[in-house]
Length: 212
Ligand code: ADP
Ligand code: ADP
Ligand code: ZN
Image (tube, rainbow, N blue to C red; front, top):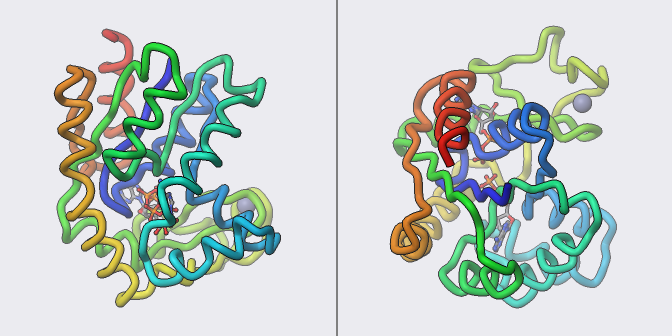
């Protein structure tokens, strides 16, 4: 199964992708996670991407597309995948169809209100070790500010501050419609409300995929 998850920053793409990867045995590919690793490792790609990410702007299509192409060539992807955070522009969507023979199976659009995503992004906290997302009030860790699995301290992503969040949402509103239209025209887009709690959202996704 080849699935992509669409929706604004904070819609819950990462959270759903992790549940789906586990329950449906698919590889979870997050372009944000890959880029953050490249930045941390100060690789040439990371050095180039850093400024864009800090400003809440999109990393240029050519760089991200090349990175995704490489990742999709790895052996674990053969069992199927969930792409989280890609494509974000019409050019990326076209490039993805060029990489995959026959395109994707389903594009799940987590349609989420602006109030919800603002609340989620500002309260998001992340485990530096395993990458699980928590939320100060929606999904707090069991103990203090420590990851339930790794017991290391959670941190706030630098781009989850209010000013950068605003920029990311503006970028999203500018670019997202053409991506949604692209998959709607292919008849592969499914709208799912992202405003409900995470198990409810997953139940809807599961139902859609069972009928695909
Ligand atoms: P969120 O989960 O909040 O939507 P991501 O972790 O997906 O954020 O992305 C973080 C940042 O990484 C983006 O603001 C952007 O700078 C960069 N990025 C991630 N995916 C892409 C992409 N497909 N195209 C361009 N830039 C990307
Ligand atoms: P995205 O990858 O789309 O940017 P995340 O999965 O990182 O979104 O979720 C953003 C924040 O909202 C995280 O702090 C996460 O714990 C929380 N969250 C995710 N899904 C839900 C949900 N359905 N209800 C409440 N909070 C959620
Ligand atoms: Zn952890």
